[in-house]
Figure 1 (cartoon, rainbow, N blue to C red):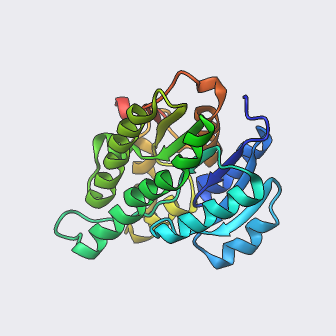
Figure 2: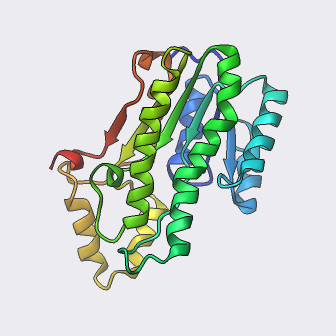
Length: 249
């Protein structure tokens, strides 16, 4: 894959896609900086196989980004790859989404990725190479009911990815994003808790995907590894749907 011991910083590694990505990148030959906002998850991450450095990181705080990237550079030499994976979901249409909810959706899901880019791009420019993989969503491509804030933020990630890709296309930095369908994670299953008929809600969620199942965290992680690797060296500015065919239905 052309990693040769490069360093990847992954956000939101406490569970789901982020956690699966630790193993995927480590097995591909990367040194992994695992970050999470949760103190409880941090101790577990520090002892996880493949983790070179585990640090607390609130992606919405610029000072946190500066601290973690600075320490990673001092201890490991560089941050060659950024996987902007962390995100939150709040359900609601425009009337149910108050200003605080709206601001949080954009702050974590969009501004957090912007701050990550600002933190790592200077080092990538100085070395003449780098890869950034942003996490968007199928909802950023086509929207969804009762997800106005989340859909808006994830649509912004796609637009930001394209703009960054153009800015750095001749400077050795590639920027792509992933748009997953529904992935079978704890976060997805939590959304079922508010449903009156959980079986019907589950069947409805699965039924949106032509392949007839939900995705696995490992299936998204493998795409992140590919996009960050030399195998994708002629790819930039792309939004890759990992959605079991949902985006074409």
